[in-house]
Image (cartoon, rainbow, N blue to C red; front, side, top):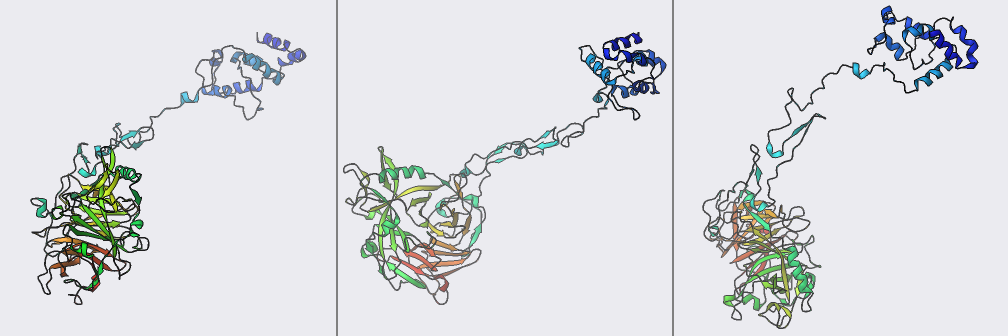
Amino acid sequence: MFRWSGFVLCGLFLLSVLRCAPVLVEEPSRELQVIRSETSRTDAAIEEPLSQETSPSEQVLFEQTPSPETNPEPLPQEIPSPTESTIDTDLPDQSVVSDEVQHETSQPEPQTETTPNPESTKEISPEPKPSCLSSNGTDLCDDGNPCNGVERCNTTTGKCVAGKAIVCDDGDDCNGTERCNTKTGACQSAPAITCPIAPNECNQSGGAGTVTANKINTYTQNQAFRLRDQNKWNAYNQIIDQIAAHPSATKVTLTTLLGDLNRTGNKVNSISGVSCLTRGYTWNSGDNGVAYWYPQGLAGSATATSNGQISGKRVLVASWYHKPEADSSTSTNKGVRVSFVDITNTATWPYRHALLVEPVMQGGKASYQPIPIHAGGLAWYKNWLYVPDTSRGLRVFDLDRILRVQTSDSNAVGYIASNDQYHGFGYKYVIPQVNLYTRCSGSCCARFSFAFLAASTQSPSILSGEYTNANVRGRLHRWALDPNTGKLVTKNRTAVATQILFPGVLKMQGAGISGQRIWISSSQSKASSPTSPGSLYTGQIGGSISTYRYPYPPEDMHYSSSQSLLWSQTENPNSRYIFAITPSKLGSACP
């Protein structure tokens, strides 16, 4: 049968007929030799048909791995059975046979797959556990703190994946900062505030901290005092813009106002009770003696700009509050006015008043109204004028948005429909409020009797303080300002006091700070020699206070570091002075 098969093959190739006969007598082919050389093959195996399981010795044939002694020509893809291979495998023309075999194997005849899959014989070992799993599969990522989220193990990478933290903060720092309980994961309200000792005006019982007479102590729980930014900037400015668009009102800058000063004060060489007087002035006779306007706050361009000047002028600004009960011309409280004083030339003292107003909408019409507060202090930084509101906090006015209005009616304010005009109680200029910071309901009691701008390139701040008549519990609070915007530093619209001091003195009317040095003006008389109707206290934070002579009753303070001048003023009619001393001269030279 095998010899017949050989002739059939030869018949298929007419050019090879004459060569077919020698095939029958040639030595076995090299492929057959490979087969016969397999020592692991038995005679029984030759007689039996191939099984699905192929022995390792046959892999040489199936994988077509050439023997080192043989020509590395490729074997035919169709492998004959062992019985056929003993007669029929050695063909005379290898190239022809190879093509023929390849042609036959290309037919869709089912083939038995004899080449073993390496993967099927590969021993499969268990994959190692990821590093974030224990040997028994327990997730090792959880740190036990539910507040930072539930961590989990990524079984692919073997690394821990962070969880989503629990956010408890309601975004309102005015009520404190809520916290997550690290044991339960539950949100908790901010811890209760421990309020410090307070003046009688706060109606507070008890309190923490230490108050020592005539010694400046520090209270460290700054979170006790917080102010809320009422964020009225846009709302107020929109009203101001509507007013400025009216024909009877014009928006102007402070430079315009300073070029339109209409009153002149008088220079004085001495003031009773003032130690180390450097400069002194008094208002003109009308303002010096008026019984229904009282001067209070004091600030200056020295803290407002980097060179201490506005359009080349050195300027002071003083606040006055109205007493309608002493004004026979009206029963209306006219609120607060401020006086801008040009102190560039020491020989002259020109100034002008302007009215502070709050923008409002009345009957759908943009208008403004007076602000009936005490205005016990002023702080001026950049274009912002900060005015303390005793029981509420700080009001803010923009000196770049001053309005020039009509002056024909000294008892009219805001929009007057009858003549379609804006008025300001006869004042030519009104300065609208642009925002306010009010004491948080959860804050400890804080009173804003006066204010002072502590100038600093990197960390400017406002120092506010409390007047108290019967004890030495009045405190000083410090509020940080953003040196870029000039506004209070806030988080979630909340400003927190950065420093709290107990000076331990009576009747504080004003205070100033430079570095660690504190100055305080007081209406408490100086009893030690030499005596005076008022007192000037000074000392280093943490140290004792020294007392110097001061006039009565002194008010707010302002410090010009470039000129080393500490300014203050007095309020009583016919004894109203604005004056400056040189602090470095205080001592034996100026008792």
